[in-house]
Length: 252
Image 1 (cartoon, rainbow, N blue to C red):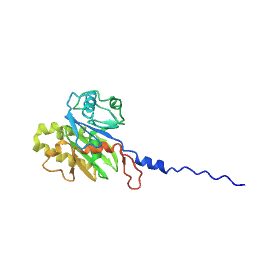
Image 2 (image 1 turned 135 degrees about the horizontal axis):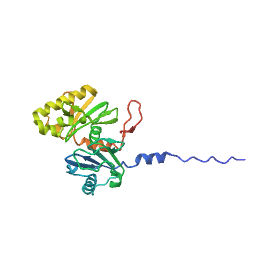
Image 3 (image 1 turned 60 degrees about the vertical axis):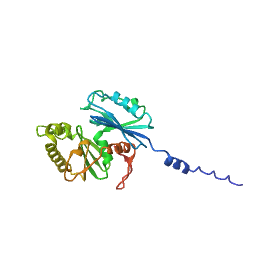
Image 4 (image 1 turned 90 degrees about the horizontal axis):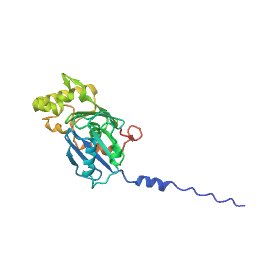
């Protein structure tokens, strides 16, 4: 008596190929600043922007972004927020914008999944080349973050006491306006040197719009670029490349 022929198992190979061939997520990156909001989407080459200011609410921001990006295609959103963020949510209102940011439902407002991080952390992630990197942002305020072996660690160094005030008052926009460029540059050099000595990074990036106002960069640092915030926003939806035998994982 002949035994019935064994049934052939279905190959899983086509499913694996289909998974690899799935399209990458299309992301809209929003960099929220004290003077302007800048946006860029996957596949676009030129960012767009509009003025922000001390009265802008999150609802106004979302409305303006939707209008400005109405001809762009995206299925996820990254937001760089100018304030402390915990578990993807703002925990304090921004100093240079309107109120209502804490507790606002950005995913519902955009109708898309949203990842929200501190704006300095997003720019730091876009500037990262490996190792232990310190990011210091000279803008409306004083942003700070570290990326250590692919893990982003937002910080609020600008709110630490420095002499008679806080760091932000010395090297942020208020410090530039109060002391003038010459003294402000000396203060920036002093502040950067203090943080490099304390944190011992492998790499230090000075970013933010006011980095262009420095005659020379502090020793041991390199200049960042505001467009790195967009690179960081796109990276938020990717996975960090494995290194030293470690598996790939989310950046944050």
